[in-house]
Image 1 (cartoon, rainbow over the protein chains, first blue to last red):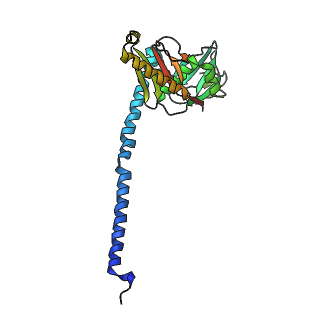
Image 2: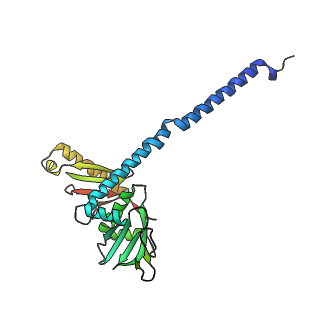
Image 3: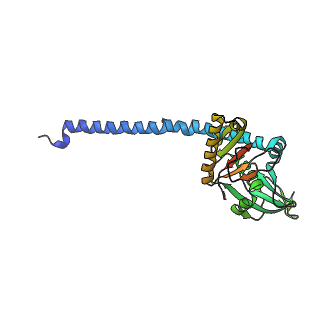
Length: 164
Length: 81
């Protein structure tokens, strides 16, 4: 006597079901690995970011002019004079990092402030410059202020409290 | 040519207009100005700050759109890190 569990029809149906599930799994796997979204992340997305960086570099050079651009390249930071306090300068690092504040050549504090959304590094430098020149009080109110530290781009003389 | 530049993830987006042609009523130039003003207000509403940028001079914060400015740069909102 033949039982339902051992019926050849059920066996075939089971194998077909397994084959369908396996095919779906393989399809999903291929879609995840090679689908259009993966190209946009690894290819087009990367190109867009490079293009954004290139545009930002170009704008920064245009606004700074040749002399300041060269200074930035050589020193690793941009020096922006205060628009409201005589003798004060802000050193804005080329890469991301804290801005150092100097009063009459002496470091008085470090500032940590950044845009709320990701933007290219050169645009971040430009934002610091524009804010310091044109909106310094708000810039200072917004920034978190720290004791003057030891930024990576600057050697420091502990005895004098001045840049080496 | 005057420019409005908006800093964003894309680097910057630029809207340009010809102030001289706009002054004599050129519709294309006036359309560009209207578009620039619309973007200016939209960005300000999001908390962005606008600056008039003139070569050789410190940047100047601007609260209202100025179609005669040579270049206005809009920067996104900043926060303490």
